[in-house]
Structure formats: C-alpha cells, structure tokens
Length: 501
Image 1 (cartoon, rainbow, N blue to C red):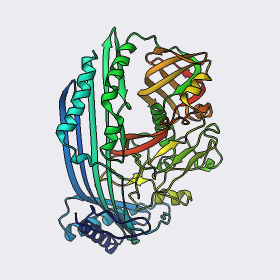
Image 2 (image 1 turned 180 degrees about the vertical axis):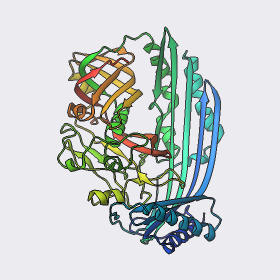
Image 3 (image 1 turned 90 degrees about the horizontal axis):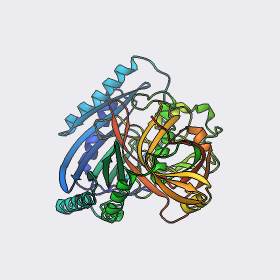
Image 4 (image 1 turned 90 degrees about the vertical axis):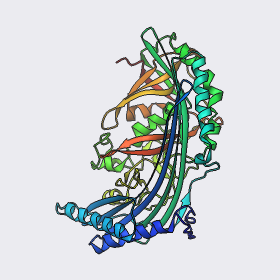
C-alpha cells in the first residue's frame, strides 16, 4: 500500500494504508448508491497473521497467512446487504461488489421491517495507529522459536507430563469509506504469548498456565512478549502444577471468595460484556451464545451490582487488546460507563441498534476480516480498580478461598447463571493464606453475585491490568473477536464454592 496521509482532528491516515485501497472502497460505495442504496460503506482490509506453538522443547507448528479483500455494506429501506471479494483487481471488481451488496439489501427489504435510521457520527477523514515499539513480524523466527522451545523444555525438565507455549501476531491495515464522507485509515498491530503445563496421576489431571490460561495479548508490538518474561515463570508454574496433584480438594459450601485479576477478566467478559451487547438485548443475535437477561426499559435504574461495581466501555485504553481509533462503522473510539456505582447505565451498540433503542451513541461494531458483516462486539469492557490490595482482602477474611487462573466455565444462554473452574486455589483462615487447594470452582447468578462484591483491589502497582481475550466467538457464520478487560483481584461474600459435576 502507498501513503495517503491526511490530517484531521482525529489524526493522520497511517502511511501504511494505501491510497489505492481508498479508491477501491470509494468505487464500491459509489456503485452501491448508484444501485439504489440509501447508505453504504466499504472496507479494504489487508491482514497478516503469524503464530507458532511449541511442545516439550520442540516447535510443533508455524502458521503464516495473509489476505486482502473488500467488504461492502448497503442499506435499502430497513435492510442491510453485505458482499465481499478477496483480492479485488480494480474499480470493476469494486463496483460489482458494491452493486451486489445493494441487490442483497433490496431482496431482504422485500420483507418489510420496522423503520431504521443510523445514529449520527462525524464523517472523519483521518486515521489511527496502535502503538508498536518492536514490529513482531521483524523479530527473527529463530529467536521466537528459541523462546518457546526454551520455556517448554524447562517445564518438561521439571517433571511435568506436557509443556506447551505459543505466540500470535496480527498486522491489520484498513481503508474505510462511507457514503456520508468518511475516509479513515487504521493500522493495528496485535501480539500475545503464553505457556501452560499439565501433570497427571491417580485419576487427576492438573494444569498451570502463565500469564493467563490462553496467554496475554494487546494492541502492541513484541515488547509485550518481552515484558511478560515467560522464562522467569517456567519453573514456578511447573512446581505448582505438580503440587496440585496432591493438594486437598477445594471444600464445598458458601464462603467468602477472592478472585485473582485474570479470572475476574473472564467473569467480566462472560457475565457482563456479553450481557450488555445491545443486539443480544434486542433479540437480534442469539446464534452463538444466546441473548441477554437485561431489559432495555431498566437501563439507568437496574441494580446490577454493589456500589463498588464500576464497569466501563473504553476502546481508548493504550495497548489493550480491544483498543482502536475507529470501529468498523467509522465511529471514533469513545469511553463511557456501562455500570456506575452498581447501576446499569450503558450498552455496547452499533449505529442501527442504538437508533432503534433511542440511544445517542454507537462505536462498538467490528468485523472479523473483510469477508464478515460488522456486528456489535466487545471492545475493552473492564472493572475500574478499587481502594484495596489483594493482601488487604486476604487479611480481612476470616474464612474463605482465593482462586486464580481460569480452567473451565459454563453460562446459560441469557448470561445469568454461571459456573467457573479455576486452576489453583488457596484456603484463607484468620486473615492468612493457607493450604493450596485443587479443583477450585464457584457458581452464581449474575446480579446476585455482583451485588455480593464487598472489597475490590487495584491499589497496589500492577494489580489492575487490561487482560486480552483473542478468541471471543459470536455470530453465524462465526466470527472471532479480540477484546480487552481491565480487572484487579476482588472479594465476594456468600458464594457457593467447590461445585462438583
């Protein structure tokens, strides 16, 4: 792609986004309008992906892919049409794709639906780039392989049965054009890595992972992988994995529960993030993970959790995996509240769903590549830090369990009734961390659980961080989304733990 720099209050178009890509997108939009669309937008997406896995000291897989394509949305009446084409060769390809999107929209409009408008957004001509200090694609493969084989060999030598590690990197350049005058370029680089090990014996299989059960990810460069420092933690997680085999079972019953930040990030993702997606609330989306228990008429009044619960939707967090400058409708990234002082006040929305719901904002619509229709997706949905530290929470607990690192989860299709299993737990007695516990688990019902939040960490350096989720699934055909979740350790009272079966 050649340079197409243009200044705007939102920033310049990244030099990595090609001017010809804008011409292709513009031609598709013009063709969609000429065919009868009342609105159209188009994205040319140029994406590279690289991943490597290692097991027990050897590289097992190396995957390198690249794709370029055009995706066009057209609106006729209240119906969307979408068409996509890989490797568009020029204006003729672009125009055919734009006209096809309008034809699909017109066919859908033959079945009348309720009136639909789009909430207003500025028609930006500009761009955004994620921060990247070290291009992950420029790091030699031999160096990456040495990192993964080294940590897996270390864990294996420490006696675990299986040791695995991986990294992934994405480089995505997008040229977006809309019929309202938007012309936006984005260059997003994402990276992540992690490792885990397994031990087996006496009918038990135990697992430990670092820094999270599927790794840590962000919109950053290779510097993120260097910072998490996998080699410094390989011996520790191998030793903990073996100790878990003979640790006592997590007891069953109602008790005080403290969750580590990594487990809190998944708790937020599953029981809050998916529940506040407006397309699920409106009943538009139910295919992959159900709808939502939330009723839009209660927005602004429903008590979701205790007064310590402050959830934000913030795609502007530097380096978080759900960060961007503009979503795939061209809406500028903006932070807002989802839950404030425990009251539900905001949703994840697109321009169409927000208009239907009578809301003034959008900004949460993204697509998995050029060939997928953009849909409401989580960005960074996180819990603001609290006034305590993990050690203060432990010290303030007479009887309870501390659990860290996710191992399994299940939640119903309204995002209400859940059960989570964790890799490791510790008994807490009289304000002190005691014995290690194996197979810790807990269960609850969303609002009842969040209303039991009585202490919240984040006061100590490093306790609060934006955890990245690189594989959030939604839609049919399925789409994989990248999301971020700010979280710190948190304490809940009267939670059922030690769930069996």
